Image (cartoon, rainbow, N blue to C red; front, side, top):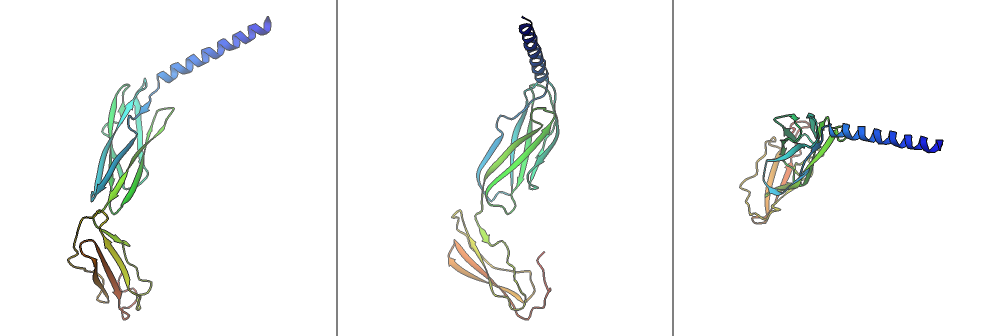
Length: 207
């Protein structure tokens, strides 16, 4: 009988502890986003992509946003209000500066808050960036300025949009020249750069 009473008392204590924990959780802030992954699809020739996440507080106390971090310097965020009351929501604007990037892109945004269960809440922005005109490689490098071999650069249109190259210019010294060759009119060109043997070392460096 004594053992039974101890066990019953132990169970009662467990129930009390659980009840206290549940009450504490209900009074805490809870961060949530209805769509934590935004896919901007496939875009072409856009310099900046802007999208918004909706940050909600589904808890019972004010949600305080301490900081928002991103996985890349090309991604910036903006949030007008950093304290969200229970049941409230606030838009988080994300600006992705595309630059010269192309292909599949995935950027992560980390929202740091006072949510005890999810102090770091991850959001994802993803999509594919296409360019009407692409140059490969993106730059040309000569291993030696003393008669380095010619360097080819391929210019194409992955999206199939016809284009023409009107001229090829260089800001390098007179010892560096370029020649344009048409591989397929409106679709594929090749630029070949030459470095003269008489060009002195360290005479020029790209900006």
